[in-house]
Length: 369
Ligand SMILES: [Mg+2]
Image: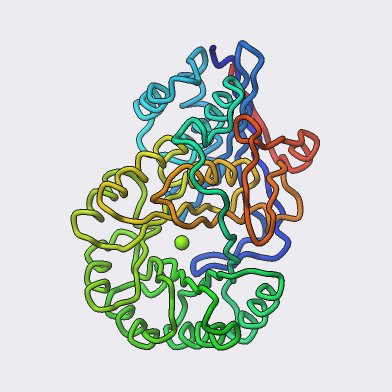
C-alpha cells in the first residue's frame, strides 16, 4: 500500500463558549485536518491542533510544514510502516510535533481500516472499558466556577478540572468555592498552565490548598523548569503533574531521573502522534509513573486518536479529551455517553468525517500528490 495524496484543510472549529486558560482566550480553535488517500482507495483522516504557547507551532506554519516539508517525502510510502514514516518525518524537520501528529493519526486510521480493526487493537488491545469524562472549568469568578460545577454535577459529572493560574490568592478562592459547592466526594484537579511561574509562588499556594482534597496540581511552574517541579514536589503531599514540561522522550527521561512528577500529561500534539505517545506511555510505565492523555481541544478526529491510546494502556489512568463536547460544529461524529466515553469496534479511528461540514469550516486548503 502506498500514500497517493495528502489533502489539507485549515479549519476553524467554532466553540460554544470561549475557552479561557492562563495564557489565552479562544473563541474558536484553529485546526488542520489531513485526508490521506492510498493506492488501494483507503482514506485516513488526521488532525493537527498547534498551540504556539506549548509546542511553538502556529496554524499557518503547521499547514506549510505538512504541505511543503513532510508531504513530499511521504508520497509513495507505506502508511503501515509507521516506524519508518516517523523516521522520514524526523529527518525532514526537527520538532514540529503537531504536523507529524496529523500524519501519524491518518496513517493509523488507514492501518485500522485496512485490517478492519479499531486502532486500539493495533497498539495493545482494549484494556479499559470506559473512562469518566472530566468537565473543564475555564477561568472565571469563583462563584461562577462554583455554579457551573454544581450544574455539571447534577448532570452526572464526578470530576472537574479547574483552570487557574492568575493571582494565587484569587486562585485559592476559586478552588475553595468549587470544593465547598460540590462536596468532598467529587474529584478536583487543578491546572495552573505555568501561571504561578516559579517554585516559591507555588509553594505559597500549595500550603493554602493542603486540606482541599485535590487529586493533583498540574504544571504550576514554567514548562522548562523541571528543577522547580522537583522543589515543589518535595514540599507538598499534593500529587504533582507535568503537562507543558513534557513533550518528547528527552523530557520524559529528565522527569523520570529527577522524580519531578507523580503523573504526566501526554498529548499527541506535543509528542508527534499515536506512535510516539505509546512510546512515552511505555517509558513512564517502566519508571512506575502514571499517565493521562490530554488534548489541545481537538475535533472528533484528534480526540478519537487520543482515546485509542488511552483505552489500550494500563498505565494511562485518566483522559481529558473533551474537545467535541465544546464545539457547536464538529467535522466528525465521535460519540460521548456523558459523563462517560466508550469506544466502538469500528475500524480505524471509528470516526466518520462529514465532508460537507469540513468544507464549511475550511478557511483555506491545499494538497500534495
Ligand atoms: Mg494542562
